[in-house]
Figure 1 (cartoon, rainbow, N blue to C red):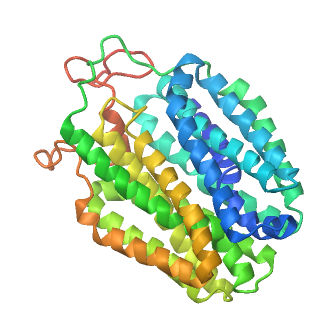
Figure 2 (cartoon, rainbow, N blue to C red):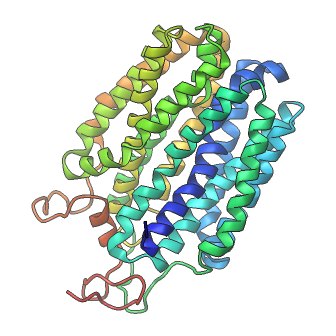
Length: 422
């Protein structure tokens, strides 16, 4: 089977995202039970360590757009992979909480650098009409990486050091492949593109509301990402290897998130957000209510994976639409807010587990998710949506189409820098 250059780039980008997001960042929760047992860590310490890659992701996201322009896409992606491989290697050899924290912090930096690098390369080498599809495929890499981590925990549940060592090897291979696949180019800004207007107070107000919802969703989801496997082992008394099925379900269901997000943009984003937040809360409550039932636990993971990936995709699309022509800012703010929410929620849920136990802590976070869902009518509408509802093109590709326009408002081809032929 022969793939087009755009599709080859999309698949390779999904692979890089699978390593940096799926393995280096989100797979950590899967290995919490054996890591906690081997290093003698308490839930509140695990909560603090779980927040570190989220904090470093935020810090890296601030400088990543500048690095992508100054260093170019190829070298930024290689830097991301190198830092990620180093972090994974440190985790595999960690003798205590401090070194473990250093490793997961490095993994967060890797995550924050990768997507801006791939976005810069995409704008330069992928035809603009393919941006939506390519972005969806690359975003699915997170779910792929989470699912790929499952065989390692099924066969290496008690050998987490070997598992992380194998992740580091994959990251090194990805760094080498990046040299040949990702071009050494920066983001394209054609000379005849329309100057970006200043961000209005209305845009800032709506971006603020979007960021608040993103923060709260990240806060609630932190309980599942960090402590769901540990809940099954500690409260449900299931073997550590059984938790792999939890992450497999999350990864498989997450692949449908891009489709749901696109449908949400075509229909009603506030209602979709409310529904997905209710599903997210339900997954927490269901897991806490029946931790010893592997079938129900896997079902809760399916619900969580679909809800989480759908919400992040929805926030991405809304951010793009709220700030036309500012791809280095619009989609970045909600993702930073999600990570900030997770970084805040992780130590809090760890402390709640220490004081009240897993079931009550998860129930509290589920209740917070329900409250946020009730507030979904406040979810921001995009600028001009009220007056142009019938004319507005829906979907992720349409959101990208509004990013690159010439002075007369006509779309510009991101490869040639010239107005596209009608």
